[in-house]
Amino acid sequence: MKSVILAVFLSGAVALAARVEPQTPKAPPIKSSPMDTIAEQYVKLVLAMGQHDADYVDAYYGPPEWKKEAETSKVDLETIGLRARALRADLERQPRTATPSGASSKSGDAEMWRLRVQYLDRQLSALEARVRILKGERLSFDDESKALYDAVAPTYPESHFQKILDQLEKRFPGSGPLVDRYAAYRKAFIIPRDKLDAVFQRAIQAGRERTLQHIKLPSEEKFTVEYVTNKSWSGYNWYQGGYHSLIQVNTDLPIFVDRAIDLACHEGYPGHHVYNALLEKNLVKDRGWIEYTVYPLFSPQSLIAEGTANFGIEVAFPGKDRAEFEKSAIFPAAGLDPSRAGDYYEVQALVDQLSYAGNEAARRYLNKEIDATQAAAWLERYALMQHDRAVQRVRFFDQYRSYVINYNLGKDMVRHFIESRGGTDAAPARRWAEFEALLSSPRLPSELK
Image 1 (cartoon, one colour):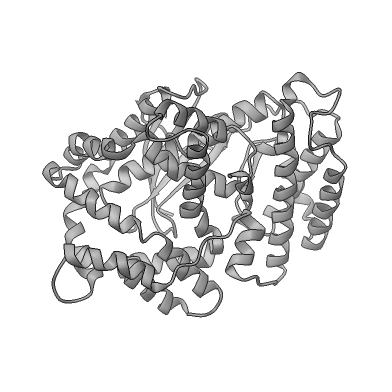
Image 2 (cartoon, rainbow, N blue to C red; image 1 turned 180 degrees about the vertical axis):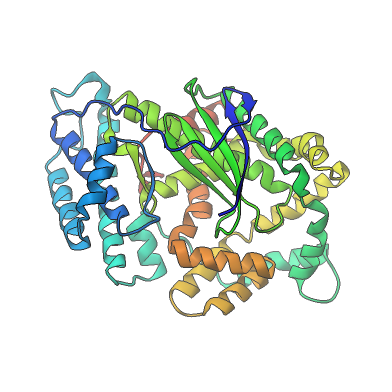
């Protein structure tokens, strides 16, 4: 992996830094209650699972000796599955409708307690499903997403996407495939390599400033940004604990101007970095819920994480406000023509309506209805991805499978949940408040109603 350090953002200040290894802050004291015992065993099971699945443990900042124990004991998959099932049986005996008597004042109200029990149950159920998958069981795309992420994405026929493509045909008349005409148009909006640093720093700064107007973050929060290559994703947040993230941006393919705000918000503010920092502060540090020191990637938590990260872009830069900011700040920083910003975002609004085309390609590919070449061609045809980007996306399907639903379905579910609680465009303060509350809770995807 080739990487170049960008910068560390610490309390608004920017300073050059070397790569920082994951931190292991002092873990909260482990209590002796049945729920805390279950939570501890859950963490250890996730770490044990990580010995069989390199992608499974996305973050861990709990007791370092637990990680060492997982590495040395090498618990087999069959045992992990049996222990997960036994823990779920233990959870069944825990109260779900009220805070148990004798619990500390930091255990939260009845609602948070109920959510905690349900969260652990579904996370363990997803762990069991992942064990079965690693042992060779093959679920359909929808069955897998339900088992792992507590949600199923809607199915759309080609005609749904064709209606949107027909509108884009009118924007880009001519001969040859529409994807090529669209690609020719987008060439004028690529961020030059020598300007990526300045552009991303400006986008991150803006996202952070807007987030801090509404959400109080720990004073120690910071993150490091790296450019990397040879990845199946475009950006990734590796949470280190201690309110610190390592954010990586993949430069294998050209980066278009809209990705600056997208990545800055999704991976940073108010997305993954803020989400993980709030979980650490509100659930781990304040409540002593040790289960949140580990993040299993293939679990319902990922739909909440990706959904809030994507919806967070709209929360920070709502409606026309984003286009205006891009025109005044991002386009000039990238050396692009600001007068074209309005037209570009009109086109992108149409293209964004094709997002579920990626789900359809993944569903058909993983259900073995089409092969890798056909999946890439489907993405070129219905998602308007150029060939190299489509091939990269199929690599993502191979590595992460039904995880793709967490981005668009997750965003739609989070938006619906927050708007149903009054967090609409017309009430931005309420939207930020509901957004922060969701980031700080153990709510499940099936709870987003």
